[in-house]
Length: 244
Image (cartoon, rainbow, N blue to C red; front, side):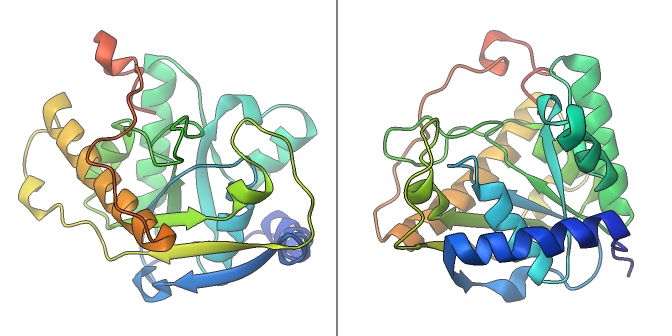
């Protein structure tokens, strides 16, 4: 089965980023066997710090599956944006047409054998207890369209260095970045069904439940029974705007 070839820009940036991550964090990884060795897949990851993409990206790259992040358009500007484009990350412009184009790019990448990383919440968590929020449905649309495995991933620790919407703390003593990867989410009962908003909502909720359960294991805490309430475009009736 196909897998992504790593370009020179990606290799150079990884060589720069790896020692930074090793400086910032101790590492504790579990469930690595669930990251597919070959073929396209989606990694569905919780988001609780501005630095967790760096830490999670280090993990997936170390698994031999360089991540292709599904990320906000605002990150693709200036010199940093040129690097993001060169590494083939996927910009998501807010609004119907932009979201749909990004989702199609993600689906094409998965079919080509790449490992695409989604933060289904669409932003940093605003939950006061740091649990994942309600997910946006774009991840479900790509999963149903491609039939690829969706791998739930929970991470914890980057938020202890840099809390969501907060400032970077002291580097030392180093925090431990924990990653727990679960088995693919079982979406077999949705095969062949029309990807309506209702179906995509159900699929997304199942994915988020898997991520939240894994995060509970990492933290050693009981999992909340409902996601943190967050008004989304979908709640207002704009299904396309809420997909990213």
